[in-house]
Length: 175
Image (cartoon, rainbow, N blue to C red; front, side, top):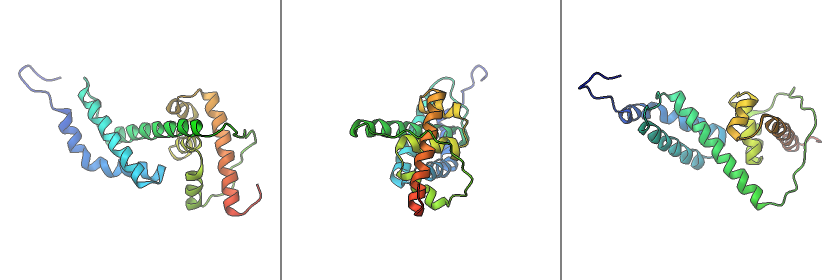
């Protein structure tokens, strides 16, 4: 709290000071998860616009690179939700249900895994990224995707199955 007659520090200035250090971290986080430069750039811009809006509120949030990466995570999840809604609206419902056990014993080649992840639908990509790349527990994944925990667990089963099938096809193995 400031003393009477003393100005409070402007959180906008603090955000500007943090910008140079945070920009490569936020952009790198987004690029590594979406794999598309233009999308990562757009989401980085959205992240910093959201940060500007947040520092205008009272009290402003405690600014840090970690906080900005959290904002970026939300922006990426929002993007995937929008993309999934658009995809559902454009295609005829004809999905498959994957109720199989999913042992992940084998070690995946990182480049092939990233390519396979990029081929999956946005809802599967979002769930797998939040759960396995970001290491979030299922409850937090559910919160990010605006789903129940049970629906998220089912989504993760289907997403792992879709990933496994696509990975096996790419490697030339029978599914």
